[in-house]
Amino acid sequence: MARLRRFFLGRVGPDLLSAAVVQPVMTAVGVFTFLAGVLYLPSLGPTRVEMVAVLLLLAAVALLCHAVGQLAAIAERLGERSDTPPERRR
Image (cartoon, rainbow, N blue to C red):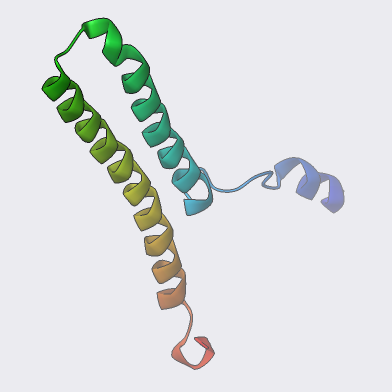
């Protein structure tokens, strides 16, 4: 009976707010935002200066999304490290 309970009530995947999920999702959001902007931009008919400015802005947003994913991974690792006793940190 205990095996059935553990089978049906056990966790299947990673925690949805863990870095294993947040990091790839934020990277995908950044890449999708950049590509969607690049593909939609010509239909707006901007001048060359406006196009360069918008592409730089889209690249900055993509980099920020990726950085947030990286920071989530760093914060999770630092949190795990602070939870362990000092004698086991090596």
